[in-house]
Length: 213
Image (tube, rainbow, N blue to C red):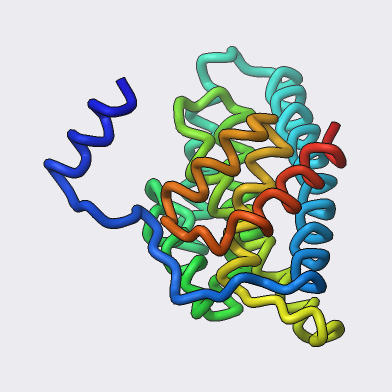
């Protein structure tokens, strides 16, 4: 089934990676420590985000209206957020590609980290039909970049680069929130075709999984 799906994608679309990364070098040991620390912090965030989604669900259950209105209310909230931050609407693969390039403006990174998270949480909590993978990857990549910027500012000797911080961030949030540890690592390697990301992904995703657990 996986081979058929991959072959169909290549036949209909393209042969390259889904989220191409710029040219990277294998990170040194200090950088590996930094990426693992990013994964640890995102694992804590993943646990908090999971609890927040359940809290939104509980809040909808306490509304004095029939449950059939919950998706409509959630849709209004998502639309209002989309009016403020249009990039939060849609699947968001373009956002992920821009974040992984390491060249996304800080305003867009912060917007996706906050507004996309809020929009996604409300949509899930209201029972609106929708995906979880792409929003999770978007928010995780944005958080990884923000933590990478902090590390570059205060700990420049670690040698962190933003594209790798974004890859670790998106995979670590996936590993911490949904718990598919091996899948989060392998899927990131396959969608980016970047073997240089293997060691940072191993450290970041394992740290996130353990912290979330």
